[in-house]
Amino acid sequence: MKVFITGASSGIGAALATEYAKRHPGAGTCIGLASRRSECLHELQTILEKNYQIKCAVYPLDVRDSVALNTAAADFIQRFGSPHVVIASAGVSRGTLTEFAEDHAAFQAVLDINLLGMLHTFQPFISAMRQNKNRKLRGQLVGIASVAGIRGLPGAGAYSASKAAVIAYLESLRVEMAASKIAVTTIAPGYIRTPMTDVNQYKMPFLLDADVAAAKFVNAIEHKRRFVVIPWQMGWIARLMWFIPPVLWDFVMKKAPYKKRLYWDWL
Ligand SMILES: NC(=O)c1ccc[n+]([C@@H]2O[C@H](COP(=O)([O-])OP(=O)(O)OC[C@H]3O[C@@H](n4cnc5c(N)ncnc54)[C@H](OP(=O)(O)O)[C@@H]3O)[C@@H](O)[C@H]2O)c1
Image 1 (cartoon, protein in one colour):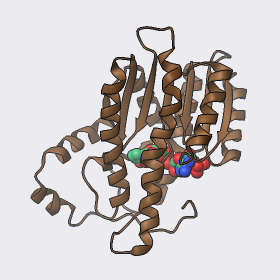
Image 2: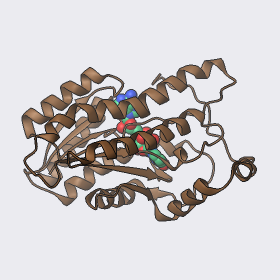
Image 3: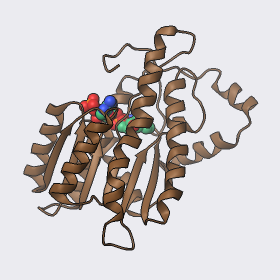
């Protein structure tokens, strides 16, 4: 099993790497771990190689840097061959408000990381996947979207816009890749317990632990699901979100809690 994962230094990305190692222990499994914090990636590499005897390759990089991703992809392909699955999990969330000029940089960073970072992740793997000899399925591209991308959440304009864009982008990509036998899976999580949600001070319905969520994500990936909301309870909420008219949405969201506008040094 060969898997390349961005956002592997924490939360969902790290849990996905661990889930693949658990399901496919042994030297035949190679996992590429990419994100900025090199020490976290190396720590995870040590644990996975020791506990599951798999091979890991660490790629400290920023997903905004397309050249770095090209280099990482070329290295992964040269060492292990074309990956079966590429997962773009790297992402950031931050409360943003349009009225504050200082939030402009946050809007830019959230869109660059969450949307363009995904494109930078997939692009360098596509031609190698197309050359894969397996004519039934040449590879799979998996994007981590969010229920927050289904309707715009107040106080999270940048994040909701980035995830709405991710959902639309993956839909385009899925159809574009079909003729090449490359599957595209969109996973829209509800609330998962990770450093991203640890800062939320409001109640998070149907909150899942990252390892439980990762097992469900990998099941969905293995079933080649096109679009899935996890957990399933959030799937029903997502359907409701899709269909209620704007006037009702505005009423329901009037009292919604806002994510904090923190200044982070990731900008
Ligand atoms: N947790 C939830 O409830 C939830 C719900 C819906 C969707 N999601 C999505 O799930 C994905 C993973 O989030 P998480 O909950 O696991 O949060 P997390 O623990 O904060 O993980 C985010 C990951 O993205 C990486 N990352 C951030 N900016 C990056 C950059 N510029 N370049 C490379 N890597 C970058 C981080 O690594 P470095 O800091 O080392 O770079 C980290 O590994 C995100 O796309 C998020 O939007 C999460």
